[in-house]
Image 1 (tube, rainbow, N blue to C red):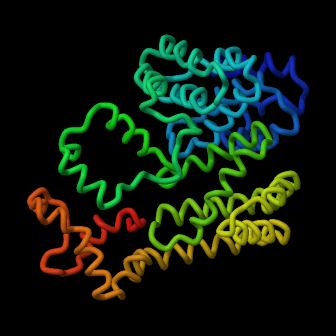
Image 2 (tube, rainbow, N blue to C red; image 1 turned 30 degrees about the vertical axis):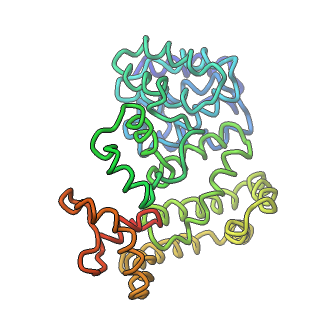
Image 3 (cartoon, rainbow, N blue to C red; image 1 turned 180 degrees about the vertical axis):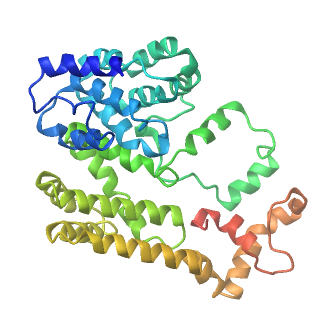
Length: 355
C-alpha cells in the first residue's frame, strides 16, 4: 500500500485541493469515477497517473470490457497534452501485468502525432505486453479512428467470387490482418461508448459526443440485439449526462441542426429528456425494445417471411452460382428445392443485417 500512497502525498503538496486526486482511503473506484467526471473543471494532467494507479490497486482495470471509461480518459488526457505525454506515461507506470494493457491502448487511441514512438518505447519497457504493442504498430489492431461502426458484410456476388478464386480457403496475410481489424467495431464492442465518454471528460470536446450521437439510430434497431443495446446505451447516457451537465446539453443542441434525418428526431428526444429530467423513461423504453426483439426475433426476418414467393425468388437467384458449384457440401446454407430456410436468410441476407 505504501507505494500507492507516495504519489498522493507528493501531489497533495503540489496541487490545488480541487485538482488533487481522492485520498487512498476514499471509496474506489467510485471516487475515481467522480474525479474523472469533474476533471474538465480543473485540468491537471500530472495528477492523472496517481488516479490510474489507485484504480489499478482497487482492481478496476482488470476487465477491459468494463474499463472503457478509464482507457478513453487516459487517451484524452494524452491527446490534450501531447508535450507532457511521455511524463504522464512514465508516472502511470509501473502497473501490474494485468493492468498494463490500459497504457498501451490509451496511447493507441490518443491520436497524438508521435504515438508510434511512445508505443515502441512501451513495447521495449513492457516485454510481457510486446505482442499487443506490436499489433497496434503493425496495424493488426485498429486505433480508435480506424474502428468501423459495424462489421464488414460481403454481398452475395462477393461471396461467390471468394469461393471461386479460393479466398474462402486460402487467405493471404494482408486480408487476414484486415479481417482481424474489422472484428473490432462499435456494433460488437459496447465499451467503446464508455471510451468516447472518457475522452469527453478529459477534453470537453465536441468530437466524442458527435461520435456517440451517430449511434442513436441503432436505438430503433429491429434486427440486432447488439445494435439495439448499443444504440440504447448511447441514447440513455447522452440524456442522463446532459441532464446534469449544462455544457453537454449545449453541445447536443449545437449538434442537432447538423444531423441527418435518421438522427435528428432521436437526438431531439434525448435533449427533451435531459431538459425535463425524464431519463428513466428512456431506460424503460430500451428494456421493452430489447425484450420484444428477444421474444419475436429479428424484424427483417419476420418481414421477409411474409414476402412469400418474392423472398424465395430473391434467395434462389442469389444461391444460383453456389448451387452450380455444389457449395452445399462445403456447409454453406442455401435454398434447396425452392424452400426458404433460416440458414439461407442468415447467409444470403447477411448483408442486410440479419444476425
